[in-house]
Length: 468
Image 1: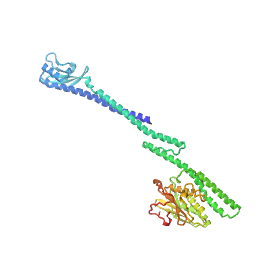
Image 2: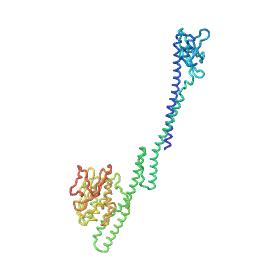
Image 3: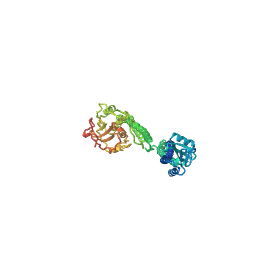
Image 4: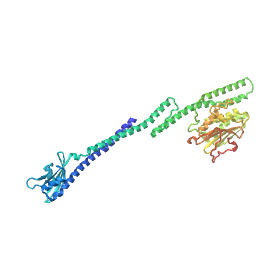
């Protein structure tokens, strides 16, 4: 690419120089010729007044000597007898002189060593004399060679300058392209951190932006694959919770003990799979572009599932705000998994008979889902929200809250843990409706309170529900 630009610049500049230099050189040559003949015309005009007054040879010789330069001028007078009278050295032929005398207008003729200007002058007697001024070839070409040399030097300088500029531009274009190639090779070799500086011409900057976006997407896809393995394993904990609770109601007996032991073993294996799949995994978003569902419908569906188990355990439950459609930019399966994770934690970490509730608040730019219970609460929300870590007191992996957090952050929202009005834990999921178009904002400390703009349409809560 670099040498191609240099060759194109060389060809274009050479054509431009030739197109301008050749006509300009011809004009300079014509100007030199016109200048030489204009000087000859002035010399001839200096003799005309004397010829109109006298034809005396001695006087005319003095006039010719004073007006001309050496032997460059001659005067051809009409014949006084048989022979014409000539003053000075004749160079033009008799035919040329006779033609000028007959036509009465100036002309030029080619003579050895240059050209002769023949200028007719009317005498007092009414006859025509001819003044001849010799213009040597050196006078016609005087300064032309120097001017042509200057033009050639200027043209060569322009060509060299254009080649140098084209070479620098080529380097400016080639270097970003080389970096792009190197970045592609590094990415192909498995170096997922390879990125390309966004510099150079507009097209290469756009190519660098597209490459970096592609690399980020590759990292995202690989991370999502690992997330999927962990999430699918984590979703097994919901039916496992039901099995464990049902096994607890089997009573005594060897079969019941074996069933409970098998369920506990299965839970441990699932936890092992989750930790293995999520080990050293980068943070990713949960929902892809275009994902969306009706949050109210998903809440009603999942509460219908958990209500049967709640009745068996004597738990009171409540759903609010799910009577109208609430569209959110989250995949249905992801929202269902997040709700199952939170409700499963309620059943697993609170005693039988503990009440719980799910509230949905629909605002102009965000939707809030609150899952609260009347249990003992979470003593350390920050540890509970830590990625891939549990509280360390009940064997929890902490991945359920992590699933919820990733779902919220994929829309530009977040998750907060606080004290509910029921007396236990309240998990608030803030789902931003237009978060994908907003620049990333700085997040505060986990579990802290952040004031948000409220507007017409109810993102206003009871003060007793506010997080500490």
